[in-house]
Amino acid sequence: MVELREVCMQFEEKTVLDGFTLKVEPEERLVVMGQTGSGKSTILRLILGTLRPNSGSIFFKQFEITRLGRRKL
Image 1 (spheres, rainbow, N blue to C red):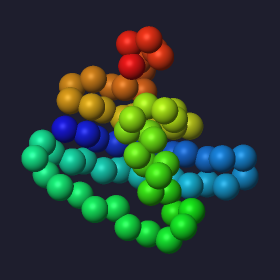
Image 2 (tube, rainbow, N blue to C red; image 1 turned 120 degrees about the horizontal axis):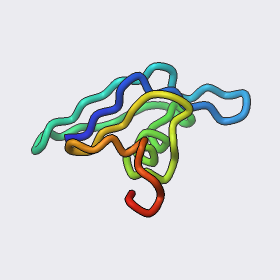
Image 3 (cartoon, rainbow, N blue to C red; image 1 turned 180 degrees about the horizontal axis):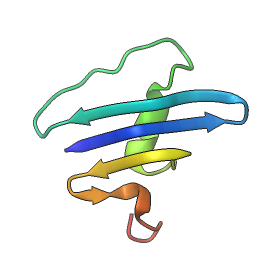
């Protein structure tokens, strides 16, 4: 299970995600579509842990990965 709760992400003056919430259950499939610059890659990078959100929480299985240090992540 992957879950993003009220995630906000901003790069300098550009807000990419503002209160974004998403939940994907095991064996569920999801397609993310949108225009260039709409946040598709940002969502994937947040889930992978290569980016940290400005606010909000990200869960993978039962772990809140936004609270994990680099080493544990």
